[in-house]
Image (cartoon, rainbow, N blue to C red; front, side, top):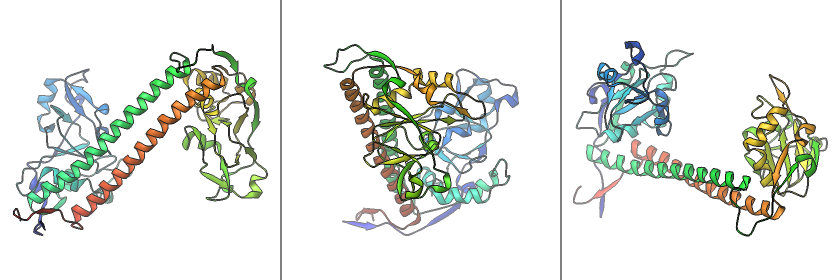
Length: 412
């Protein structure tokens, strides 16, 4: 049997429960240089939305670390951004020796009434982030002071209950971190497999025929999108793809659209069919010009202006779209781009792009492998989104007293 924990509440400011709250400094101010190795130095970018991001860290010498003793960090410390994107918070665990810059406040809990893990989750609440955003000073570069950090009030139940709440939320964080690592690993594996399969370095079982070089113009007919303005787009109607969405909404292929237009607008636009390849006819840089997305949806749709459509039947659309977005083909499109402020590419230039292709059955098999990998990644992302949603709900319920953890009756 279980009983609810005591409703006793404790309140204190961070200044009261922390040994001392300080911020770091830039080592170059004291004449030190950045090092290629040594003591890790954390910048505000390291305090990310999803934990400590060590990819953004730098290194300082042992001598610099000694001069900056006040801003050294250790396990259990809480790091809070106080300039720029204020209110982000991480907990230091298993990091080893490190130091922080002047844009991070260090909180070191030393009050027996408060568990450091609980305080971390308390500060991670969305309401706390909103609190800091309301009290910032400076428009160009928002910031909060150490005094405002010290005045931050923390409210919690008894220490043992705080520890159980922190443990429950830590489990959610661990699940989220595990899923993030799995997604990153799966994406890296897909990238490696894609590189090998699209170049013929690795062949799928049963395929041995040689590959042939050709141009995109030989594979089909190029058409030009037309007739869709931003004001024409609605949330329902005839499915539509606009050229900007090729950069922002889709990656390699899609079965659905994000935009819709009225029938009268669709009548003036270019109809696209399942299997069509859509190329962005304009962009901001040569490196991104001609981004390609295969439309493989079953519902007829239309394409807006600045989209160039390749229509053919002798290629697998997913395979060719993925291939068209690889570096060798991107480099060809970049060289064919015209303009500076806005870069354009013509259907004639796209028609001259050269690719090396296997026969259609092998294209189909490779496309199936890549789509299966994408399906697994999407499933993991859904699990990750659900885990994050559950964590937000748990945080709201447990840290506001909306729900209370059960404890063994004998402990109660």
